[in-house]
Image (cartoon, rainbow, N blue to C red; front, side, top):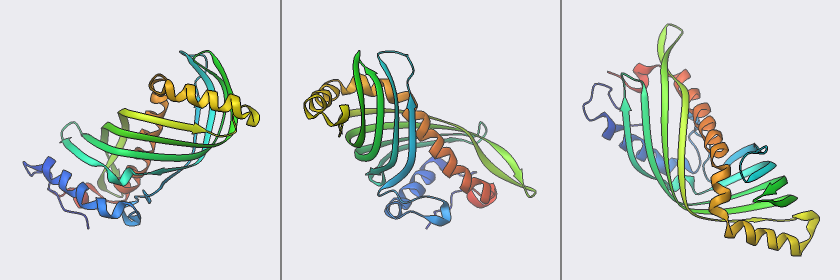
Length: 224
């Protein structure tokens, strides 16, 4: 299933790109032996966002039982690895993502109060993402292993639409007005939440990658 790439290969970037693309048909159901969870949907137990009093968005929100549909449909744009600096850069494009979750929120968005708890849905299209992975080498049972130290994620969304049910204790008129407001101003709102989402995605990537890297030595994953 996993294509073997050699770290001495002058075309290592191309080989790694093909290796990742080879895995795409299996991502929907997941690949347990590589510690890759099911991606259709991708399940995330919880995301907590505390914006404090920074910027024009000041909210405390929690999203639970998050299900993300569409991540396996990514288009891999490029893979660049620097073995000396132990650095990997991946660029991908996603045509769409659909997300559902149980949410609770309290605070202000663009000076307007917002509160509620219920179901949330979001549709996101034309997503460009860049991941910069910084690693180092560790010794496990006398063998060298890759270790991910940090993952910096940056993404841009072409368009987003969201819906939050049961805002303002079920007041349908206020709830519809707020949902309309959020969608009219989605780009500004998304920009405020973007750093927290990028950090959360980076932490997930690091968690899954290190499960793989800490089990298999470098010479098994990328032989000379």
